Length: 437
Image 1 (cartoon, rainbow, N blue to C red):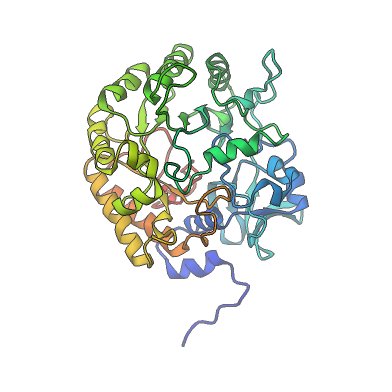
Image 2: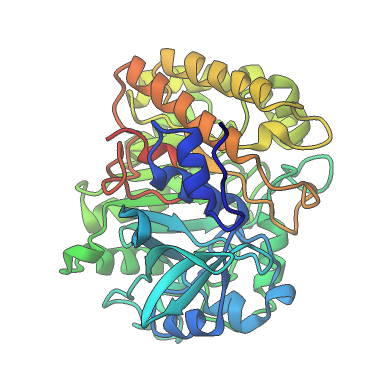
């Protein structure tokens, strides 16, 4: 006899029956990342005085600023922790993806901040407090958090060059809104990260020094992630490549803070001599984001990467980079779910997962540990009309990633904090780090 499931039954409960070996925290986290969250007026009131969205690189939201209204787009929390609730969930970090049409909402019920799905409570929610250095200002009035924001209470995110030289329909990645988001940020009035295209090195170093000196273990800095748009032309008459552009920043940071905290550098694929420049300057981990494993989709989704570097060269350099940086220190991003992007993506979950698993197998067998970011379908991209990512795909891709990672006995990808089970992992952009346990 088939079990009758009430229409009001939350997705996390339904999918926990479908995938009994997957932590419920993974299911809820992936559903929040793919569908986003709305915030009720009471839920937004709780965000006042908390650490708010910074818009440091991409929008990472499904609704655009006009659709949400500026009070919401600049007042929502950057990330949250969900836990407890009716399912006794373990403490889990997740990025806040704003979507005013989502069935999920941040709300306040009976005096508690909660996540609801169609009005039914699924978890308690904790908003991030501001660390002590937030609110400090430089002589020109710029606040520290407008130079380098904090994520997940532990990540410093440094966007050295927040535009991208891959430009227009023939070069921009079809899922990326970096250039669109920069234009949008310049119209907003909130205290998000400065819209200056190039970060001032002295200010970056000053903020990171304050972050490292933060005495509160709840906001202890565990990683510095440095990134920006691709560089293929001279920047203000200076370097015409990401390695030479970023190396001085890295060297100055290391001189101020030493080598205790890892530095993750995310750039386009680099030849090994340029990667050594970055390593010698002081980076710990290099991530040249491949985005998708299937070569056909790579060429369609990332035309600039294909034009300037090419799929074969990109993959070969990932393998070579392990010899320069070491296992765990080469971790390209894969946009989880982009495999099914319309109109040219895989038609079925089975085909898409098989492709993703093949990528995990091949990369990890060479010591490359890809990290997943669940695809956020942002309104300023060429794929903005796509439907939400399949939850079945996301869960099955997380399983495939975790099984392959365990198979090759690889370390965690460095610079993203602990991982391996709910209640342990810090990274909030994928449920794959919360598998196991």
